Amino acid sequence: MASAPVVVRGGGELATAAARLLFLSGLPVVVLERTQPLAVRRLVAFSEAVVVGEIVLVTTIKQALDRVRPSFNPAAATLGPSFPSGHSATAAALYAAVALVLARRRAPRTRALIAGAAAAVAVAVACSRVMLGVHWLSDVIAGLAFGWAWFAICAIAFGGRFLAFGAPLKTAASVAASDERTSGSSPAVQP
Image (cartoon, rainbow, N blue to C red; front, side, top):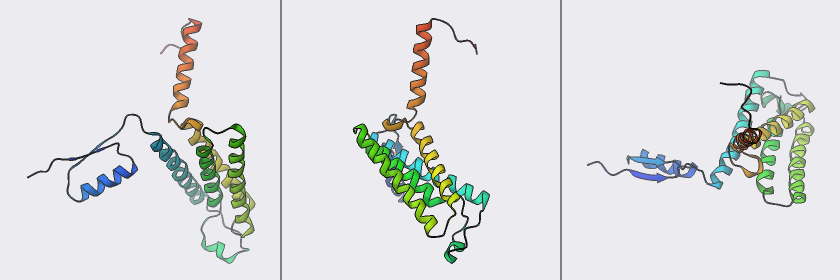
């Protein structure tokens, strides 16, 4: 006798894991997705995009360039490629993302302090990598640049401090539509 399927609504990270366990135990499972994700799910998706994307980006670049580490510290030779610094890139992207999330709905001065603290921690991590003798200065500068650049790309894609995925595209489309209505002219290029 076939049992009725277990219905899981809003298949986010935790619900998906629970649905998988139910499926592996032999129960039929149906996962329903929400059309508009909850704010918490947007934060999780943003955080995952920043951290996982940065790790993939830096690892790919490290493997492609395969730069040798400094020989000051004998342990550095066992750590793999040097350029760019993964610790610096992760610190830059992660702490910038945390600062963006924490600074939402705060006063401008508080936002500036949180952003400054995030940048200071990332720079401190970068300095520690050079002082430990496991990276060249150029490695950590590139790591910071890659981390902050990837964070900026993700933050723009997710709508900045509002964290609404695709918000920049929707805003641009609505501005273009209102400009078109007010000018009364047709676009210069016809499809």
